[in-house]
Length: 159
Image 1 (cartoon, helix red, strand yellow):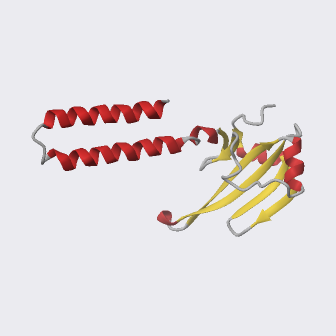
Image 2 (image 1 turned 90 degrees about the vertical axis):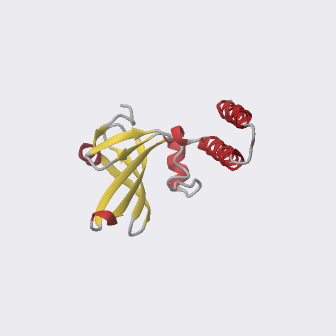
Image 3 (image 1 turned 90 degrees about the horizontal axis):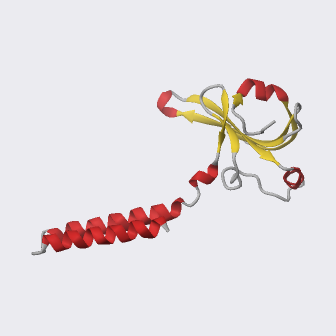
Protein backbone atom coordinates (compact mmCIF):
# COMPACT_ATOMS: atom_id res chain seq x y z
CA UNK A 1 0.00 0.00 0.00
CA UNK A 2 1.35 3.44 -0.96
CA UNK A 3 1.77 5.49 2.25
CA UNK A 4 1.01 8.68 0.32
CA UNK A 5 -2.37 7.92 -1.19
CA UNK A 6 -5.21 10.31 -0.32
CA UNK A 7 -7.47 8.73 2.28
CA UNK A 8 -10.22 9.36 4.78
CA UNK A 9 -8.75 10.83 7.95
CA UNK A 10 -10.98 8.82 10.34
CA UNK A 11 -10.24 5.52 8.55
CA UNK A 12 -6.51 6.23 8.69
CA UNK A 13 -6.59 7.22 12.37
CA UNK A 14 -8.49 4.03 13.23
CA UNK A 15 -5.62 1.95 11.77
CA UNK A 16 -2.70 3.59 13.57
CA UNK A 17 -1.23 2.86 16.96
CA UNK A 18 1.21 5.01 18.87
CA UNK A 19 4.70 3.56 19.16
CA UNK A 20 6.12 6.41 21.23
CA UNK A 21 5.06 9.90 22.28
CA UNK A 22 7.97 12.21 21.55
CA UNK A 23 6.87 15.66 22.64
CA UNK A 24 3.69 17.50 23.58
CA UNK A 25 2.79 21.12 24.31
CA UNK A 26 -0.55 22.91 24.55
CA UNK A 27 -0.67 23.41 20.79
CA UNK A 28 1.45 20.69 19.18
CA UNK A 29 2.44 17.07 19.61
CA UNK A 30 4.88 14.68 17.97
CA UNK A 31 4.78 10.90 18.06
CA UNK A 32 5.92 7.88 16.11
CA UNK A 33 2.94 5.84 14.96
CA UNK A 34 2.46 2.61 13.03
CA UNK A 35 -0.25 1.55 10.60
CA UNK A 36 -1.50 -1.82 11.90
CA UNK A 37 -2.56 -2.95 8.41
CA UNK A 38 0.68 -2.48 6.47
CA UNK A 39 3.31 -1.90 9.18
CA UNK A 40 4.28 1.53 7.81
CA UNK A 41 5.69 3.89 10.46
CA UNK A 42 4.97 7.61 10.41
CA UNK A 43 6.13 10.63 12.30
CA UNK A 44 2.89 12.24 13.45
CA UNK A 45 2.73 15.98 13.94
CA UNK A 46 -0.53 17.32 15.39
CA UNK A 47 -1.19 20.96 16.00
CA UNK A 48 -4.00 23.28 16.99
CA UNK A 49 -4.56 26.54 15.15
CA UNK A 50 -6.67 29.17 16.88
CA UNK A 51 -8.52 31.12 14.22
CA UNK A 52 -8.97 34.53 15.84
CA UNK A 53 -10.78 35.98 12.82
CA UNK A 54 -13.55 33.44 13.43
CA UNK A 55 -14.10 34.00 17.13
CA UNK A 56 -11.24 31.89 18.39
CA UNK A 57 -12.35 28.69 16.69
CA UNK A 58 -9.81 25.88 17.18
CA UNK A 59 -8.82 23.89 14.13
CA UNK A 60 -6.95 20.60 14.58
CA UNK A 61 -4.48 19.52 11.89
CA UNK A 62 -2.49 16.31 11.43
CA UNK A 63 0.63 15.59 9.38
CA UNK A 64 2.04 12.10 8.80
CA UNK A 65 5.57 11.72 7.46
CA UNK A 66 6.35 8.16 6.25
CA UNK A 67 9.50 6.84 7.92
CA UNK A 68 12.08 4.27 6.90
CA UNK A 69 13.21 1.76 9.56
CA UNK A 70 16.49 3.62 10.11
CA UNK A 71 14.64 6.90 10.63
CA UNK A 72 12.29 5.28 13.16
CA UNK A 73 15.23 4.04 15.21
CA UNK A 74 17.14 7.32 14.93
CA UNK A 75 14.12 9.31 16.13
CA UNK A 76 13.31 6.88 18.93
CA UNK A 77 16.89 7.03 20.20
CA UNK A 78 17.05 10.85 19.87
CA UNK A 79 19.70 10.74 17.16
CA UNK A 80 17.60 12.51 14.54
CA UNK A 81 15.67 15.76 14.77
CA UNK A 82 12.04 15.58 13.67
CA UNK A 83 10.57 19.07 14.13
CA UNK A 84 8.25 20.57 11.55
CA UNK A 85 8.93 22.16 9.06
CA UNK A 86 12.75 22.05 9.11
CA UNK A 87 13.01 18.25 9.00
CA UNK A 88 10.05 17.55 6.74
CA UNK A 89 11.69 17.70 3.29
CA UNK A 90 10.02 14.64 1.74
CA UNK A 91 6.35 14.10 0.79
CA UNK A 92 3.88 13.47 3.62
CA UNK A 93 0.16 13.28 4.29
CA UNK A 94 -1.58 16.26 5.80
CA UNK A 95 -5.10 17.12 6.83
CA UNK A 96 -7.04 20.23 6.05
CA UNK A 97 -10.38 21.54 7.17
CA UNK A 98 -12.23 18.54 5.71
CA UNK A 99 -11.99 14.87 6.66
CA UNK A 100 -9.27 13.85 4.22
CA UNK A 101 -5.55 13.25 4.39
CA UNK A 102 -3.87 14.45 1.20
CA UNK A 103 -0.29 14.02 0.00
CA UNK A 104 1.86 17.14 0.08
CA UNK A 105 5.32 17.53 -1.46
CA UNK A 106 7.32 20.24 0.33
CA UNK A 107 10.09 20.04 -2.26
CA UNK A 108 7.88 22.09 -4.56
CA UNK A 109 8.64 25.05 -2.28
CA UNK A 110 12.40 24.51 -2.06
CA UNK A 111 14.59 26.82 -4.09
CA UNK A 112 12.29 29.79 -3.84
CA UNK A 113 15.18 31.89 -2.56
CA UNK A 114 16.40 32.35 -6.13
CA UNK A 115 12.94 33.55 -7.20
CA UNK A 116 12.76 35.92 -4.24
CA UNK A 117 16.15 37.42 -5.16
CA UNK A 118 14.95 37.91 -8.73
CA UNK A 119 11.79 39.64 -7.50
CA UNK A 120 13.86 42.05 -5.42
CA UNK A 121 16.18 42.73 -8.36
CA UNK A 122 13.19 43.38 -10.65
CA UNK A 123 11.65 45.72 -8.10
CA UNK A 124 14.93 47.61 -7.72
CA UNK A 125 15.19 48.07 -11.52
CA UNK A 126 11.62 49.33 -11.69
CA UNK A 127 12.26 51.80 -8.88
CA UNK A 128 15.39 53.08 -10.63
CA UNK A 129 13.40 53.44 -13.85
CA UNK A 130 10.70 55.43 -12.08
CA UNK A 131 13.28 57.76 -10.46
CA UNK A 132 15.08 58.37 -13.76
CA UNK A 133 11.94 58.80 -15.87
CA UNK A 134 11.23 62.43 -15.01
CA UNK A 135 14.84 63.58 -15.35
CA UNK A 136 15.83 61.89 -18.60
CA UNK A 137 15.62 63.38 -22.08
CA UNK A 138 15.76 60.00 -23.80
CA UNK A 139 12.77 58.09 -22.40
CA UNK A 140 12.92 55.55 -25.25
CA UNK A 141 16.51 54.57 -24.44
CA UNK A 142 15.72 54.42 -20.72
CA UNK A 143 12.79 52.08 -21.44
CA UNK A 144 14.90 49.91 -23.77
CA UNK A 145 17.58 49.63 -21.06
CA UNK A 146 14.96 48.69 -18.47
CA UNK A 147 13.61 45.83 -20.59
CA UNK A 148 17.13 44.61 -21.37
CA UNK A 149 17.95 44.55 -17.63
CA UNK A 150 14.66 42.83 -16.75
CA UNK A 151 15.30 40.17 -19.41
CA UNK A 152 18.78 39.56 -17.99
CA UNK A 153 17.39 39.10 -14.46
CA UNK A 154 14.73 36.67 -15.69
CA UNK A 155 17.25 34.66 -17.74
CA UNK A 156 19.55 34.41 -14.71
CA UNK A 157 16.64 33.06 -12.64
CA UNK A 158 15.77 30.41 -15.26
CA UNK A 159 19.33 29.00 -15.29
